[in-house]
Length: 421
Image 1 (cartoon, one colour):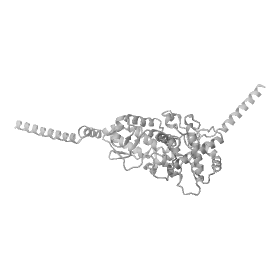
Image 2 (image 1 turned 90 degrees about the vertical axis):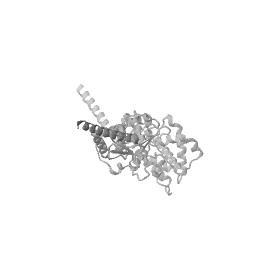
Image 3 (image 1 turned 90 degrees about the horizontal axis):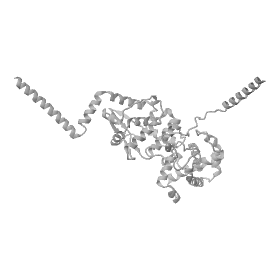
Image 4 (image 1 turned 30 degrees about the vertical axis):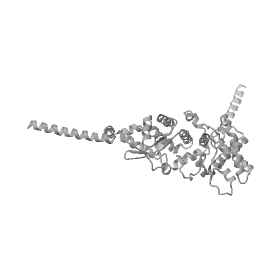
């Protein structure tokens, strides 16, 4: 009797376990591209991944600190629907309901909202963004807009729209835009997006291919302006060391700003001169870079070109003296004021980067720099030049000293010869 009961209990346990395993499904699919930032990245700077004024999508919906913007979001949503042709709320709602399950699958975390709540969030947030872009493009600002979109608030709003956790799928935005203006000659939606992209990221080219969201759009513009995106560099073993900028300088490496490049990532090395495109560092730089880096880490680690760039800059910058050197060469434009703050920012960005390989273009540069620095003659030559020829007057003084030394030697030799004879 006990054996039968034990056997039945085992059967029940097996059925429960089998049912549990059959229900297990992959959390992430190829269409999942709106990610929660992993804890090991988020903990380095929580604020950089958290919206300041507006929540977009379900991840931060209901955040008490962002509720003040909900009124403006709904107002903009209404205004966008009223400007649409025709003014058909039912068409918008019907479309969002149709794609709700697909949209839900774009997020890495399980969405706790009901279908009705999720539809409302996506519809309001998308129409808010579209109305904001429309007003920005056509400069159709009202007194209400001016009163609530104060300069600082507007700046935060733009950068909130680039946060990896604060996104809606771009295909929904694009479809709602098309539904709103089916028969007009309005420009494609992608032409509106420079109004949310930083100037040093926007490439000026709107042919960016498939876009999944605004974070992805910003990264694509960054790559479009870079030779890396054209060459599609292969990747291989990671370079683990490069001397800092001041040490490279002491070894004879020259630094120049790469004025010919429009892309942040275009590093070039020729004749022991490292050319680096200029980068402006201000209060928003860390937020933008951290979210683009997080997107690469979560979604496109095999093409993590921005990760590679940050690794190189992290190598080059150890202290504020390295920052000062790069500022002097025009490579860094420091709007933070404090060189140590710039060094801390770039060093902090490097902490969260996990990569096992590197693009081959950068590897060639780093290996050539390391080989150059290991040659003792280069270090001695650079030291002599730094100590005795770093200014025009010091160079003349050094030459005069050498000439005087030679004359003294010649005079001494002649004196010895006279004594001998």
